[in-house]
Image (cartoon, rainbow, N blue to C red; front, side, top):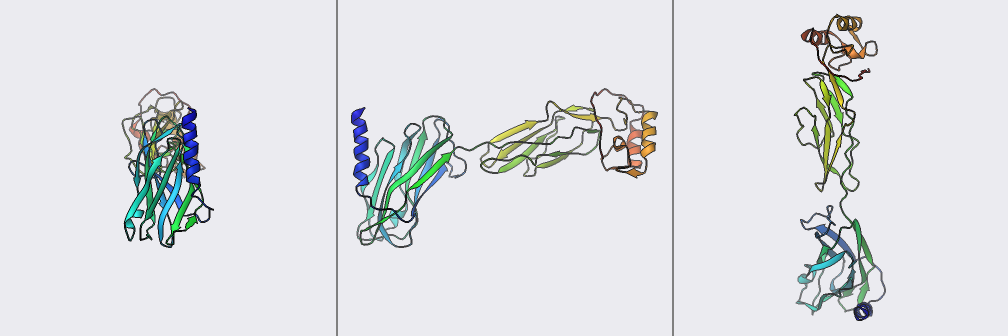
Length: 325
């Protein structure tokens, strides 16, 4: 164990000897999942992801060197490759010291053009990491970075640290209607849903009567129930990384009453007709809102027709429903 520790210290110190002062920020890090998406990193055990070291410069350079540091407790390297930048040298590129993983959480990179230079910006080094155990976040950094100008002198670059966190699932939040009448168009509101580290890609409503909405990017839905009863609707949202979250209106189901049953006693009869007559040809706020069977805020012939269609019918639904204008 002591021998391994000493070797790690020697490897880091030996590379540090070639590093000079730091200045401009010319090296950066980009992390992607294995499908090339920068926003959907999987940090569960046995997942892989890629980190690219990006070089940015506005003058020709003939080489680069840096350390790439990571946590060996949670990550291990499975593949290291040179990027495209050094292949654009005006003369042959030689990797005199191939990328080396010391096994101590430190990868050394040193590469130069012989007799030429490159003006290309982009990926200079790629490494694929394997996740050894489930983690929420981990840090990867570039230290001891140098670019070398065409005279062979180093141009110091500042250290770069990148905190990589796994994708967080979205949060589904919905406002469900508490009650309504058969064939009344009700609104379901999912505007409170959000994604803590990305964006919501789709909304899918299920109404507990066998009907679903199409998958959509719209948070609002409308639905009418045809049969009285208690319904547990749900909203499922997916984020830009396909993570899923679902919410239900349990334990407070949406109560659907039979159109025409103004007093909510399970029977459509003359008592309901009398209440309709008292509000007839009026609109909110001058009506008994329980007589508004279609939700248009007025009581008129359309509501009378619904009462007439269900005249004498009985059903059993127990709920407290008081509609408001």
